[in-house]
Length: 198
Image (cartoon, rainbow, N blue to C red; front, side):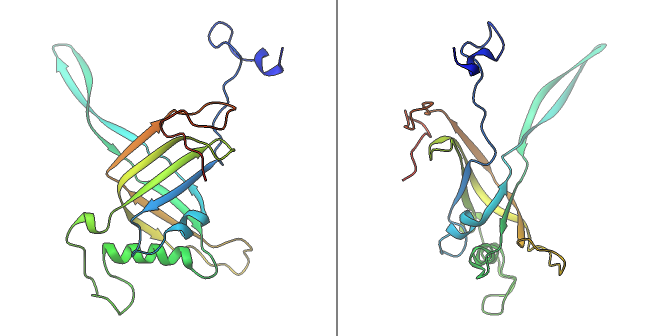
């Protein structure tokens, strides 16, 4: 008998332990970010990203000498994306172009303080793929209606010896979480989000 099958909770899970997802196996891609240029530099330089958090408002109901709660409207917290700024500024250039689409703030060649008349003209899509280590997608988050609420260019320090990190906060309208389609040990998809990376 294999060692892994000797661990776990008897009579609850047969076959031993389930393999956990690891935090360092992921990729993020973008659709429609920036001024029409390729957003791949941001994907390549990404270092951390948070997954969506959902919150439900609590509605308190009073009846006689007791109370109960029901779920009200929900909302999603913004996510945080950090990436290392490359020496040519390719990744940061995409972020700047996106910020210009939201409202023209930097540089003199555009309509200063000009803003997009509708959200569809500046919002983008963020796709977060969770991987199994063999280029197989186990599940994915698709965040629609994304835009930056905060862009922090980083901090310079003569005594430091690490990469300059840009921190952004992304607000989105709606996430879709697709789970499944993964066959353990096979490296192939059975449907759903499980797709092999070319």
